[in-house]
Image 1 (cartoon, one colour):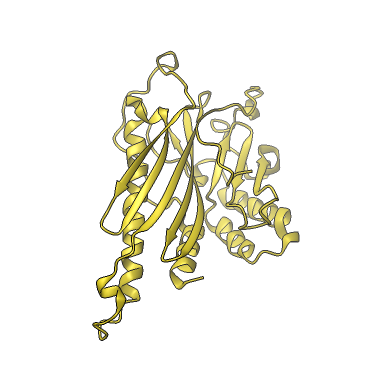
Image 2 (cartoon, rainbow, N blue to C red; image 1 turned 180 degrees about the vertical axis):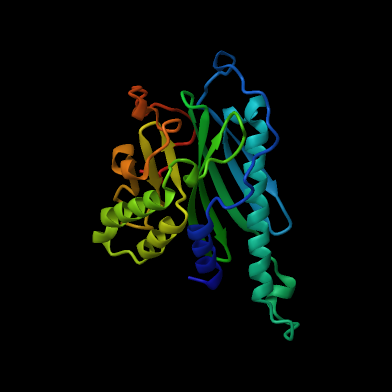
Length: 268
């Protein structure tokens, strides 16, 4: 595995989702009766100087209320991939060797990006599960990102927003994730455990808890479910905030959500 692949994977493990705290400016939240929930998808291809990105987007992205949000995510993944690949070329360029192939050859890097937007209508927020496959100079990488954001405020929902004692909640989640997957002995698990202790990411917010999602092969073999649901009951000592977890109010909302996008084989 090249240095670029290792550094890219480590960066995404530690900083996945760490970009602007707000989405494009707030738009009026549409009434649910005005939205046709549809699981169909469409593709878009974006070509840059050194990279080509193919996006598989849910029909939801054509809805005026969500089109800017989809555009925000799409632009982020295009620019980040182009920036990272140019950095890789520059880092490996021998400026003293004018005959180097890198001076004259610029192999295009490719990425395939699938979006699964999960609308939790009862709470007015959306989760975006983003599945990325990248290929560059005979190297391959598979990545999974998860983002939660408030449909009303258009702001990302951070882990510390969910609990009165987010540090205790993070430690609890870290230990539960480690205990769930430690039997497989994957070295990445130690990095992920440390990252969750500091700043938990890659989780889907649900009315009765949170669910961590990891790329297949990262914490366990490919045939093992790489997800872990943590009930709000397991986090009660951290004082979960009732506005995010209505099951604490005695409201039976279940774990229903409307999913818009692709059910990828990368997720179990």
